[in-house]
Amino acid sequence: MKRANLPPGPTGLPLLGNIFQMPTETPWLTFAAWARKYGDVMSVSVLGQPIIFLTSPQAASDLLDRKSAIYSDRPELVFIGELVGYKESLPLCTYGDSFREQRKLVAEALGPRNTSAWRELEEGKVKEFLGELLEKPELFLEHIRLLVSRIAFGISHGYTIPDGNDPMALLAVEANTNFGKAIAPGAYLCDVLPILRYIPDWTGVRFKQEAKIFRKTMNAVRDDAYNALKAQVALGTAKPSFTTSLIQREENPTEAQELIYKWSSASVFIGGSDTSVSAIGSIFVALSLYPEVQKQAQEELDRVVGPDRLPSFKDQPNLPYLNAVVMEIHRWKPVNPLGVPHRCTQEDIYNGFRIPAGSIVFANAWCVAILHDEAVYPSPLEFIPERYLQEEKGVADGLNPDPRRFAFGYGRRVCPGKDLAEDSIFICAAMILATFNLTRPKSSVTSEYTSGPICHPLPFPCNITPRSRKAEALILAGARIDT
Image 1 (cartoon, rainbow, N blue to C red):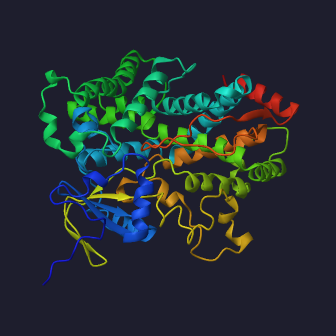
Image 2: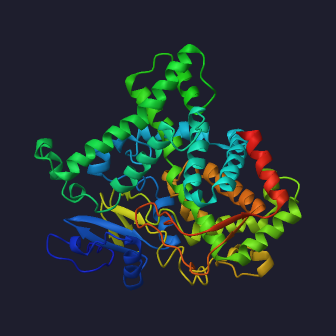
Image 3: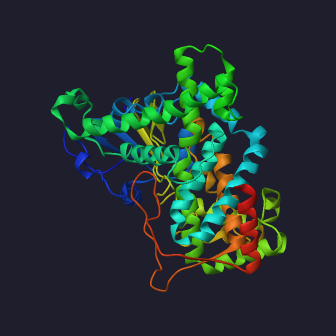
């Protein structure tokens, strides 16, 4: 019987494959262009390593969801995994006992049973954010990062961050920056030629020196806050938090068990922080570029909430248009267009194509056949929340599926903190719209984003002003109560 072929893809060189064709800037756009030519399952090869790109909801679901038993592993990433030290972290660890234990612990902390506790914290931190936005609106991107750090550290460690100069806040920013740089496809030659990992440190090669710096930050992220809280638990002074509960589980945990606790703790305050910062930044981008969307969302809030209080999570079921705005944020500017790669652990056949064991598999969320496919999302480059209000607009079945299906990963690797992230984005959008107007100078009608694995809006001019004197009073009252 004839052996099935690999999925189609661009022609490469003998032995080297497509190594010189792999893009380093906005790679998802290149892969989207390739998908138009080669289809929704395509392949490339880099020095003999097969890489598969899935560029349709059907293909991503068929393989990463329905066949998750063989598509839930992670590939070996030499730089960030081995040299920097993240190979045992929840996002990157291999599919096995450590992964399952960490995921279970994090899911327990961020599961439905704890929703009310974290929602109260989120509302309080967003009120504090509104006060800072009122005082220094020009620093809104910095305020967003501080807001997300406050929510994450509050849940993970019961820790209060006073300002952006707090050591733990600065550490979280540094860790996220390093992680994003280190995981970028093709950023480090040792990921393409793993043998380079054995180059002696004394040679002074750049990637070895950079790995040392990144590893120092990684050790601090994983260990410092955990150890400080462990000392507080021993003294009986620790505040309730996810990490406090981990430390109190076992009086004398084994070294391996404590490592799992440390990585689980770090995953809660680091894992989704950078993505939430990006998504909330996109709220400012979208609302300032689309004043008609801002106006309609504000009119809905005025009807449901009124002018005498700030919106809360209790209002969410009665705010369909605002919920649609949040959904469109995920589709319009996906924070992680390529996602984190999966690894196929045994040979598979899909639609007549062979996917070898050991293949690296990407689901390109940006790609033509997923979030920006005009046949699925008409006018894909436009920000149109109405596309999800199907009953009201009579949108045909099959169009405009919920983009959150593609925003938080697939199968057994789906983000365990997705509910927390969704809540943060919703309550932030609701309170901003209730209290502020966002406008652009006439000279600024577009926004650029970074091209790394996590896409962030680059600094842009945005006029942020209170909607009314009453709105300003609500901001000041909320900030005083929750500071």
